[in-house]
Image (cartoon, rainbow, N blue to C red; front, top):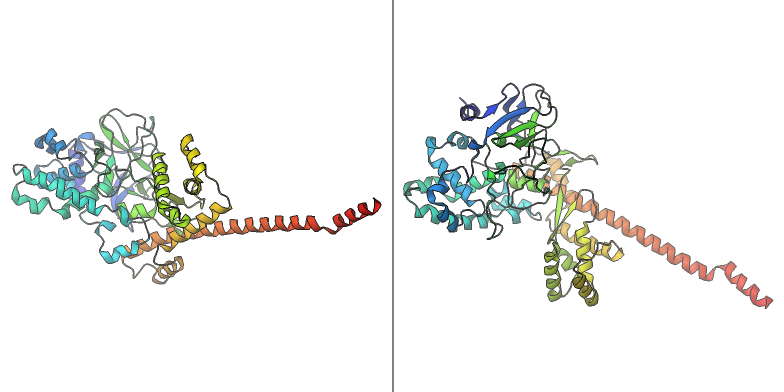
Length: 494
């Protein structure tokens, strides 16, 4: 019996329900294992139901109770993902006696995410925001300062001979990557309406995929993962709803392709089709239509789809631009700049703005530029009013934005033409998977930067032409022959 069959047997014997006449599992080219429609599926059809008792989380694992909840919190196991990682390690160590043994055996043990790339491969990501978000150092700090001391302090739960087998740093990274790529954010109690936090550049600590309220209810917020199992703040507790959800995590996702979503009921979670699915089509879940940088970081793949301009890439690609690039262009006083940036952050601004594929200058960047350019008197008035400057795209701001984007583009060690030629020449056949995916991601970001730069330069040329036209017109009015002749005629008549 293969791994999928064993998983399905375990799932159904444990109370799960699946419509096996409609849903099957197979391996797709470039997607790996995923779900397929075995026949035409109508919208609103329940594909499978997962009892809440099958969810694997810090709420369902027996480990926190065995440790003692006070000791669990004292060791800060409730912060970040370290507690859930330890639960998954411990459940794995229990072997067949663990309720989730068959499920854990079905999960991947290797990943194509940059967390596992070597230094040479990571060089391919230079200039992108991916490397800075891996959180590898933070993860290793959590392992050494939280998880390992807990494991070593309780030999009754973690026998010494099991530590080098089940509780190593390598396995810690594997478990963290499983959470990052496959977990869901599941509400514990009765569904409540949440504010929508879904966004292309969201980096809050959360889950890989979303769970919605029942179709007749208001949808819940989408939780996106942050750097691998890292704490975001010492005061922030682990989102208790982050759970591993058997079977649901076998669905793949692709930009704009979602045709099924996970909805939660009081006693179970239900994967429901959100549109008709034809026989033979893949059943897609959603990651929130993320850019390739985030897809690569979290899941180890990139989306390559037709774009409106005829190119191939991810329609959701974005470019992150740090505030220090604007500071560098404006060359403002360090003390003054720090004071203003601190105030900007207090006002809800961010130190990173996002350039999207619509090629529009981010309003936040324009506001930040105006803030940094304020005179001392204007600065005092802004603080007094407790409001950041409104975005304004004048000729001076255009020049600053242009310089900022040129600096951002220069952070990549290769040009867009270099990357495009390499991808065309190799056609992806002789490149390693990691290099090819990094190349596709870089190309998407550089296209946005270069196209936005071209748009800005065109705006500058138009503004210059209009100004020149106005200046020329003004000079002509001063010396226009007929006006001069008229003045002379009037003089003579007098």
